[in-house]
Image (tube, rainbow, N blue to C red):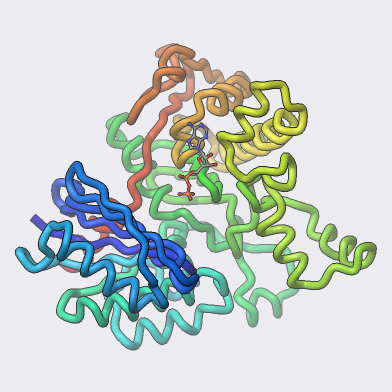
Length: 393
Ligand code: ADP
């Protein structure tokens, strides 16, 4: 048994899971929200029982004290068996961190230097790591990067056609995100299909959405770019857009950089199109006849279909499509809308399997030339396994 505590520290929340890297069994999980906002909200699940309570949580350090207390009060006892590792999800590894990395002061310093690349995410991740190091000083801590799986992108896919100084001096290139999920899901598809020589498009569709072209086990293109703003239509992010639109809005509406950033990251996507960022809400409204919601879904589907077509061409073939993330796993209607538009690739949906999909499910017929799967992602397990392989080397 290798018990790993996986930590995902955001700007005002800490999500955690205690699991065994060997069996994948989850012993406990929890969420601490509204850190620094007066009253924090906490949830801790151990076995079958879930506790919820409120308490003042001033900062990440206080969150990790509360996390320790949650285990102390509701179990399992973290002292009963030593932790094998603490695994931290880190959003941006730049070009420096291409694999999971054991954390020390030197690594923390290098992560701080990457902050300009991920000004929203990395500082929160770093604060979480520092607080966790203080709480669990005797356990190896490992950083697992959202960008790392995309280390294999070829220059043709990661290069933007911008001035050389932007590329050389300002780190402007595609990095890609959701790598932990794309890696986990593509490995599951390979395991199910029984081979690794596969051209797979993985669609991670949650609040953030990204597509990844995985050829023979390696990411060769992905829709998020230098930041998570590029690509698919998301809950509140616009995804692809003519880069001249921000100039237009600056000139005609007088918007400044901060307002443009906020508009494109937080007021666009589903929210901009139909007033709500939650896909289920939009889907329910579309079913009830709401024209804006239906139009928003049409934009989402069109963008997805374009990316699948582009990635099939980039890989030279298409063997499988995998749906994951809250929307990918739970919206049969969205999957049917996308797969129904892929007859050019010989995709034949199995409507019954798609409607009833639960857990890992094949949702195409045996005659379909491309297999499509629902694969529930498991980023925590992937992080725990990466901790295990790094520390066993
Ligand atoms: P995150 O990216 O924050 O991890 P999730 O992967 O949980 O988020 O995905 C959240 C999205 O999944 C939301 O837009 C939510 O509405 C959507 N979703 C969850 N359940 C369903 C469902 N049954 N039908 C359609 N969409 C769903």
